[in-house]
Length: 253
Image 1 (cartoon, rainbow, N blue to C red):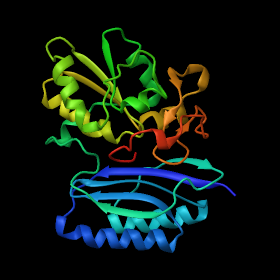
Image 2: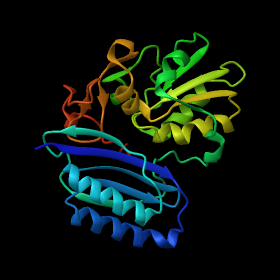
Image 3: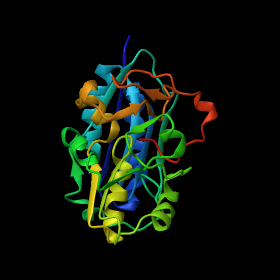
């Protein structure tokens, strides 16, 4: 048996009074379709990584799209076992915790498709920032990327304030696991006055899915927020360190 693992998110405004209703509806759909994993809902949108048998995932996706009134953009991989143990739907202040006010619309025009990413990060004038945490970086990253050395995403603004200057660093490219952290951090950087900001559309997972290994500038494995711990360049379970030895991340991607 092969289980399908999907991740999806969207910055989409919800009435805060509606969040408990959304939480209960999503929880019920997970139980009905034998889906396990985590969904986070907030006033700013939703963020999820869940798993189930492919036919159950298909039914679940259809129901979720109706509940959330959207078309989900999925990233998908497969594993012999379900890497999640429970059904978990949470209401949080943010779907990815930055603790800074951000106008998401300022991220318009910053996305770079995976097939164009190599060209961007091969430019010597571009500063490449890995927006993930230190333990994620150590499993693998893009060639030439800076490790901010953070333990959680909300520490990244301090790193930028201390190490980057919009008057000096005119081109900044960033990436994360599935794209959500950059969806928030790219517009934050634009707010700070950085002129040219680039984010990898769909994150590392989409890049590994679409870019051939012989053309890839990715080095190592990609940390994921489930019992697989890491995935390799083929999105198969990697050989990363024991998850229990790694600090728990503030949000899944």
